[in-house]
Image 1 (tube, one colour):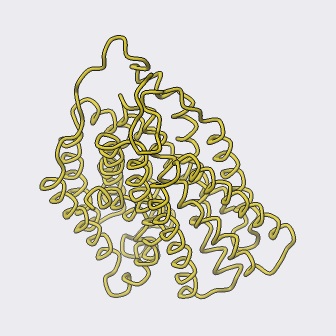
Image 2 (cartoon, one colour; image 1 turned 180 degrees about the horizontal axis):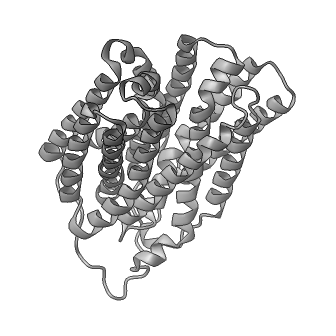
Length: 394
């Protein structure tokens, strides 16, 4: 529960306040571009922060960097809620992202410290489900609460969640990282060789581009549902909620199926279903059907990712046992980099055509499937077995 909370706070903080952007423009005497920059600075901070806290957790253990990160995160969150000017808000959001990254990257590393194989895939499915659903549900909850609470109230909610996460970390999280040096003759003892292995790169990139596909949908969804389909803000929220609920259901199903099926098989099935759904989406866009028809392939494309998020992450980090913090950091940093890059691309022609969204999702899905297909484990000491334990070398 604590790890799920730590993994979900930062993605939730990313865009809960999006519905309050117009109010913030007038309150802070700035421009829409200035307010949007607060989202950009957070994403930049979150990407860089994972590259900082991941290696630190490999060097100094998981607990200490996590607590330090959460303390800074709490202070930056409070400052963002109190920010009197856009400049202060941008600075606070940058440090929010930097420090909030500690919970995301270290929670994944802790799982690889304490479990392997199918149990790791189960736990990672839950963690990545929270990370994937949070940015989807956050704007919906923000649109409901922005009226009575205002944008500062939304940011205070994030601050309270961070405070709860800090208390839970201090009370619940123990040190899980072993500082025992690997044996001199141990195969693949070099972190660099782990990070450049096909097992790590293939599964890591499969996760990154699967997430990029979902972020393409999230970024373009207001234009797709409201401008093209003609839905109201309430109806848009309902459609958004249905897709989020479908992702949650499939993610929960993935955690259960991980007891019986190999993570590789579940991830492959999820990404193939996603690709088929995206291809159907592209065909419908090319055929110029009524926009409302596009809702179905979007639903199945988003839901199917619940089978891949946790399993590809577990497989990637299983390939870097000597440096899971760094491996988790690279995964998270690239996730934020490509998620930020896809947003302006799918926004081209917003409200008039869904083709940029369709092509962006298609490219992301194809890359994810190819990456997973090229991932081949060369690590016999950490291969994922049917009973959930790492198998030893013969």
